[in-house]
Amino acid sequence: MRIALIRHGQTDWNLTGRMQGRTDVPLNETGREQARRLAEQLAREGRWDAVVTSPLQRALETAEILADLLSLAAIVCDDLVERSFGDAEGLSHSDALEQWPSRIYPSMEGHVEVAERGVTALDRIADRFPGGRVIAVTHGSFIRHVLADISALPSDEMPRAENIAISEIERDESGRWRVESISGRAFASDGEPAPE
Image (tube, rainbow, N blue to C red; front, top):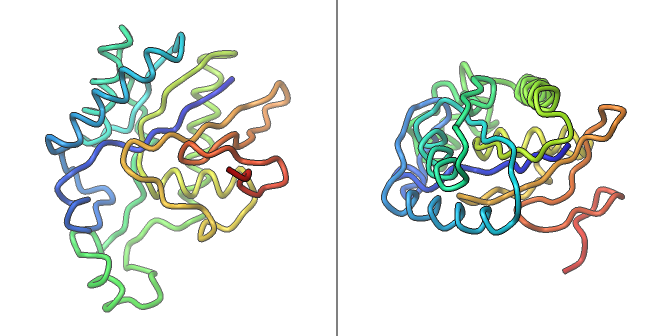
């Protein structure tokens, strides 16, 4: 069972470096065009069994564009929602860091909670589509923490996913997840990114 974790297309808040979290920011026109180009790429890569998505507008719209070209329906999965950044949402990264140098923002969802929620959601998706190939449209921080948990590496060592970046994971017959690629770059079994 393989899942392609895709970060949503660009938003205006991405352009200005504002922290989105659970704030429901829509795609901008660049983000829509990114999703259309990605849909064409995915259509060339063979059969997909499902498109699942975070309920937030930026992910849902990305997923709907992908699903439409792939002749699938976008299925909302609430647990694919982005991590909450609490009081830091809406601030620029630099302003948030100035107020909270520790990067622990009041009311923020913790690293462990994000990872546990994410892996549980992916397990449910895998159980629903056994042996399938599934696209999961979600968010940058969510993806980073899930990949860190699966690979047993610190989340700080995970590269930041750009808009529309694809990271692939695979679940074996024992139910164990393995990271295959991060943002389109192969990931070696020893936990190090494969050389290019």
